[in-house]
Image 1: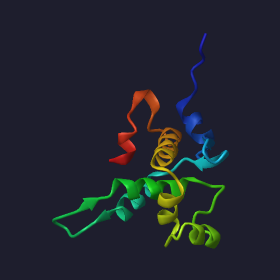
Image 2: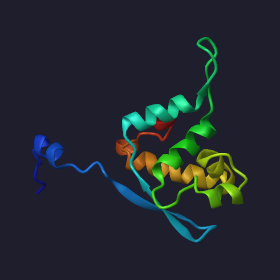
Image 3: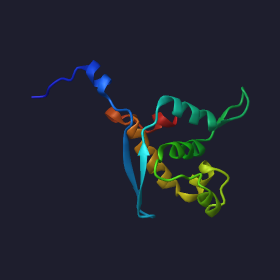
Image 4: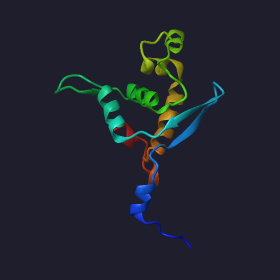
Length: 129
């Protein structure tokens, strides 16, 4: 028999600092990622959107790289050695050069699930839009 949890107590005792590992087979390492909050997602959307008021363009690939930069906790993609190795201007540029597109996709999908976007069969596209 399943017991029902008091919703108020569930919120009062919830831990928003949720983390998991994503294994990158090509590198033989796991990247530790954390769940993202709404403010971080909104800021990432803003950073990936360009243009004036009438013609706003959203760069989905840049958005994913920004999310990876915000989610990964055990690698500093903005570290001077990383920037030099990948001839990158910043952490987002480094991610786009150091990781393959499929690896970025796997990390963002895992982050979306960790951040609650995959509950009840929701699509990853929810976090992208």
